[in-house]
Length: 322
Ligand code: C5P
Image (tube, rainbow, N blue to C red; front, side, top):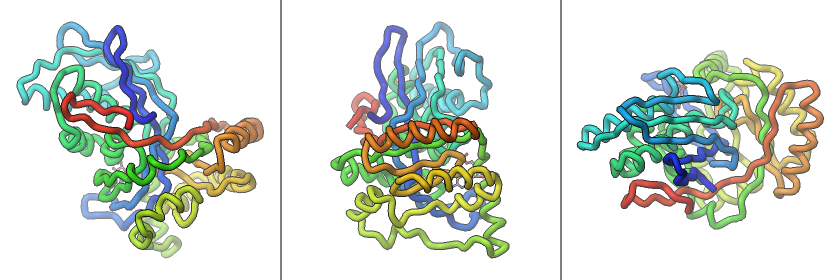
């Protein structure tokens, strides 16, 4: 299941999935400080839960894991941005109580904050009856963060620009069996700007090379087979994150002793993921790593599978499972 939205007695309940970057190549910095990327994003079955309840007045309130959240939270900012669009279109957009229950580790490269923001756009579009199209929400999402547009498509997609230019690969990947992964999320918060800056430094000192992304040289139909084998792909931010957080590289080395098809970091880290041959293998390896690593390192281990893309019905401005 991708982003899932169900009706409850109070309003709506959204389940916002995490993502893995199966491949991530990074260009030198642009004039605006961002980096162009060429990446394959994959939504996976680890979810945050967000409840939306219409409320009297016109206040937007947000509670995260029982604690009132500040206005800098991406969910709150998504709600405000969408309300502005709705009101500009003559909709009332009344008050709403939002409560967020986090399961996706923060600062881990798993895209939890971005996914929560995307789920907020879709849910409140429905509650407020704004009728915004996916293109409308993608434009708002890109203002909130580079990874937000991806979550309005879900499934598997190639993302370029600073991440906001999304080309879905659903037709290719959704027809195949899901892929299974073990995710290891150490208790390390890897700030994205710092990891990108560390890569720039490694490149200017000649330690890391700037390479063109392999994706253009691969036939589209081969992307699925290569993803299923964990072959060819890489993440340019790995070396930078390992320099900043050497213990991450130790965990990656430990994972490489297990029979994963590949071991890689997602986004700017700190989570690492191993591709498994089957759901059974993922369950076995997650249990093993949880038992072994848990003793020495503060790390959370999840077994997940790849999710299909979202089907979008602009008629009611909602996203459904494909
Ligand atoms: O877009 P977002 O707010 O998620 O980006 C956070 C930070 O990550 C940016 O300010 C930038 O430092 C870095 N970044 C980047 N290139 C990207 C995406 C993010 O340099 N493509």
